[in-house]
Amino acid sequence: MRIIEGYALSLVGNDYFVVEEGMDVSDNIYPISDVAARVWEHIVDRDFRVSSVAKFLTEECDYDILTAQVNAHEMVKEWQEAGFIEE
Image (cartoon, helix red, strand yellow):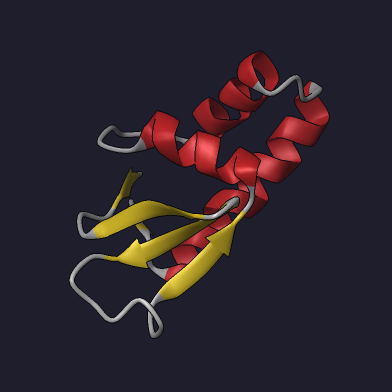
């Protein structure tokens, strides 16, 4: 999988958002958590799998393996449904 070109991570105040570049921000804004923003920064411009996101969560965010696997699966599913990533 890969993040689709044209989407970017944006920090507004203390909050992170995924925005579609070149579009009116008020129409195309998707809030994400601080952890999700760290994952985004790690995988942007590279291919990834749910397992590599889970590995990042265990190694960089101190998640236990089960929690990391569940959260990685949910995060990737949400991003697929939002249209940010492609297989």
